[in-house]
Image (cartoon, rainbow, N blue to C red; front, side, top):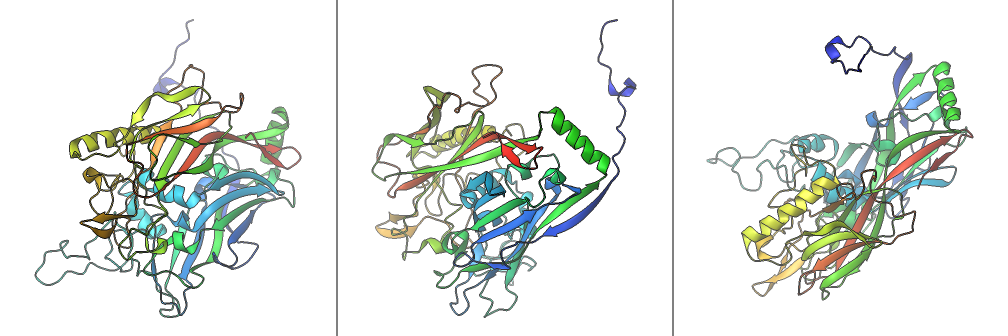
Length: 505
């Protein structure tokens, strides 16, 4: 009889599996190296995660912490960037002193790439409760404050107090504790890193006793982590009440024995597959133009996507001038006047035809056409081209623009300041101003050269990986540009029979 594929309505062979006896509960894991953390003091948070009998469900677990203004006596206030990961420059996962994964420049990656490109407009409402985002609240007010409407004006039209979703918080949102007791914000966010962003539960009982998983979060400096109304003169901010709220599933001994049997059948290792990230950076001087090569020494068997941003650390040309502390220095980035870009692995370029970017333009129509190509390639890098909102809340007023004379006037290159009418002007957003981010992406699976290739292998032949940018005549702008590159690659985590863990890359 010829094999047939039966529809679900008459496929009586497809039955539900029997449930595994289990008990779910929640446990809080606290740091083992202190109770309070600050960038100028104890600047690392270390949390050990272990259990002799329970599985960890990473998709239903989260990190919780409280941020206070530690500028007692200094008087400086601050508001938040657009992601609570702005407080963490680096995340590492270790076991027994061995680093299993390390995400550098995590603060910039989350603020400039992940949050604006993967959170849609409705998600901003959720973020206003869990991540301190400005969602439907008035300028400088708490998240539960009603809109203030001056007499005679209809609702929603009052200047400076209208409900906004795509602006930063006011830089006066969190005053020092000495001046306003209780001035703080509590955050709840999922824990990032390869093991914590995949679907499978983590078999913690398979780990060697006394060798737990250790999550280490290194704090970002105060000048970058938040948006200040004046440069901080003390410790900046402080993080307290930190814990990892883990969803644990207790299972019977028979289930754990079955895990060990599968482990032995797979050569002594139980495998969980996910993705991890490399970070590399370089600088392009303001006067440089033409082809610029950014080295990305990422040697992995399967590179999936690449993301990059261009930002300036020079604030001398701003009005005042302002300092880095008073700017949205993690989220804000620009086009660097790039006209096209592609990735080169060995002698092969991806994509074969370079992706076009605006460069320096004066025509609004031409500018928007080239911006759309960059957005579509970014969506492909996230694998979300068919989604309803493939690039989050990036939009025409916040992508390759600046606060003053952005977009069609050619000032969306990421410069923090410029001379406008002969006078200094600030281009980088500050407190209460619009969120502006310009991430770029390259998909390394859409351009496969063979049907069986998954991503790009840069490890086997030890091939050089370079991001090739073509910069318009005149250079990347009036300020040097730091190019940050994040390479996403496949990673396999091995739970070995000796209770230790290993990784494929």
